[in-house]
Length: 312
Ligand SMILES: Nc1ncnc2c1ncn2[C@@H]1O[C@H](COP(=O)(O)OP(=O)(O)OP(=O)(O)O)[C@@H](O)[C@H]1O
Image 1 (spheres, rainbow, N blue to C red):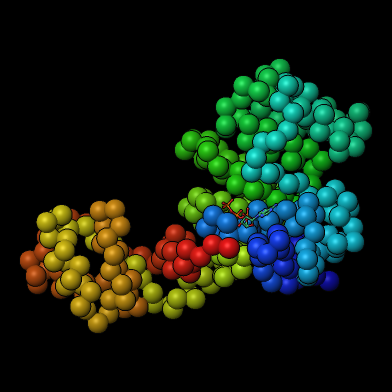
Image 2 (tube, rainbow, N blue to C red; image 1 turned 45 degrees about the vertical axis):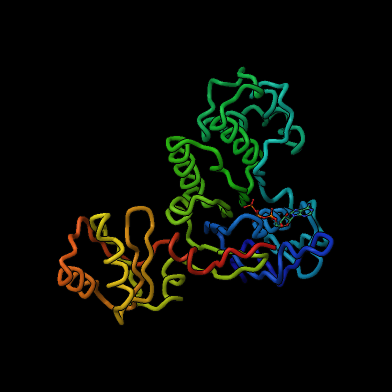
């Protein structure tokens, strides 16, 4: 018996001549959180819509708990909650009416509906705001409401398309906490985002897409090992007037694969086990070091190296 909730087999989707998703295969196991990242136009939303049976693959298949999106799209839709990136729902309602409306759409019996609405409002911190009109909601509360709607029929699989888009730092932190709570309840979650530190923090598995293709997938350690176990990123801040000298010194070193200026830091990629040789060389050239840090590459660095800025 497989424990995979989502099985994506060689799925392709085109719009006219544009290949939005190209031969993607992926599995997401029960209770896991998959973070999907990629540049604009990479095909993330299209893939999430295919998983949610809101669009049909041209070839390949997707099964949710063994049910095919091709043959049983309606049954698939009842098993998952899809949170779209855009808020395209009726706005001339208050929060309570809005949730009541979607409760009816999901076929939740009247006797159960108020309890479900209460549960999702508690989870998304919308309790006591049932009378507030949807039209005037802040972005943060609108995203909470979209998520509450997504959870109404208590789906075991959640497909969240850029839920953190437009949120301020506090709202983002709160959303991360809600996603973690949902994961701790055993939900399987697929979430797309451009906010890589959030994805790094909440995901068990990460998929990187570019130009319709899944270019890398796995947990953070396996993505790192794709670049060699000893791969390190060194960040050095030197006096601004010594930056050019430091860059040319470092680029001439054997152990340095690349050295770039990012914001105020020289970011150095190396396969060497420590960055001591970088320190020694800078000091030898009388370059004053204001800050020095070395670490394994984070998701942003892996992303920058695995994608080339290709669009479909
Ligand atoms: N309904 C559609 N008709 C035509 N082209 C489409 C349609 N939906 C998506 N596309 C195209 O498919 C490609 C992938 O789009 P998609 O929205 O899936 O990317 P994305 O990774 O979600 O991008 P973003 O990060 O900008 O939201 C893009 O080139 C987009 O213009």
